[in-house]
Amino acid sequence: MSKFNPWKIAFFLIVAAGCIPSGQVSGGVSPTPEPASPASIAPASPSESTSPSASNSPTKTEGTGGDIVAQAADCTNPQTQLEINECAAKSAEVADEKLNEVYQQLKATLSPNQEKLLTDAQLAWIEFRDKNCEFARGRFEGGSIAPTVYSSCIERVTQQRTEELQGYAQDQL
Image (cartoon, rainbow, N blue to C red):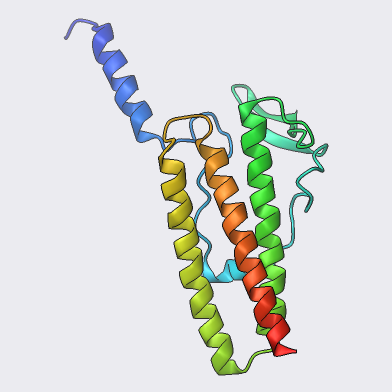
């Protein structure tokens, strides 16, 4: 039987911690949303408020003793980096919901061939957006601001795409 070695345990914990993707360590929201699938192009029914400033609804978080109800971040005046990260993620989600609305409106005005071209372009754009914002976040990898950088990038680029699709929709009229 081998002798108890605290250094081996410390080494194991450090290696194990490095294998956990950032944002998943404490049961919080992952700073890297999964890339959108073709199904997510359709408008989603919002499970949270569509306003980034509405924030008094309770959310579930996982704690040591099981699930507990915690108050959501106040996005009108976030005080901590965690709240800033959560609010940036909410803003990105709102921008994505708006994009999906505009996308569906535009799609309804197109011929089947144009609709397919738009869908292909949108899927390629989603891949670009996600990779581009992963790059932006990567400059701050390991820092507490990294999730905010990612979400802010997603929000900004998504708003630009929404404006672009709105322009296409105007041209269809």
